[in-house]
Length: 160
Ligand code: COA
Image 1 (tube, rainbow, N blue to C red):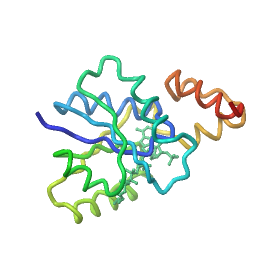
Image 2: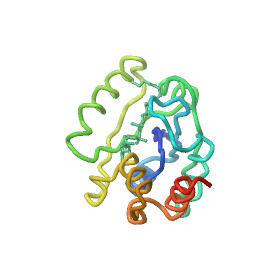
Image 3: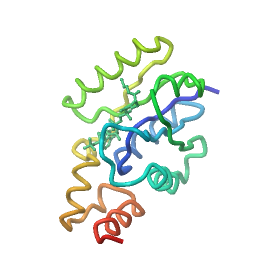
Image 4: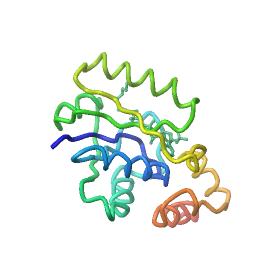
């Protein structure tokens, strides 16, 4: 059974991420969401919380699981015997960053392919940082993230 990794910071997981995950789950025998522990981004949620929040949204996706990882993605992919890395491409503006990352990963390990999936257009402008900004300022993020994530954002910004 072919395993693919869906890596990201997922701070937090959005409906756009879920859309990519659902598409990937149709293409591969197994999809493992890989939450980066040492992302370059300063995260609002701990890796454990991010994993937990994603796990709560896997109903109907029996071939998906969620783990966290440390260190190089290609190293983790090799350890897990993953044949591919899935990334979402929302708009042209994602392309340059994703292209560089895919080529660098290929340089580090020529055996791991990066495959791009386009989420539904409705999510083309959704991003984790915008969602956090809106939630922080008291805006409604319920259309952009799963219910448990919206609640967690509310609690985080209420200081609880
Ligand atoms: N829907 C909604 N938003 C999406 C999305 C989609 N389908 N696809 C991407 N995004 C958004 C995210 O919301 C996020 O927005 P933000 O930057 O405003 O917060 C951004 O696009 C990307 O975040 P995410 O999807 O969580 O991934 P990432 O780019 O943070 O992940 C890693 C990067 C973890 C894959 C990368 O840093 C990595 O591999 N790290 C391990 C170390 C390593 O190997 N480094 C060498 C890499 S060459």
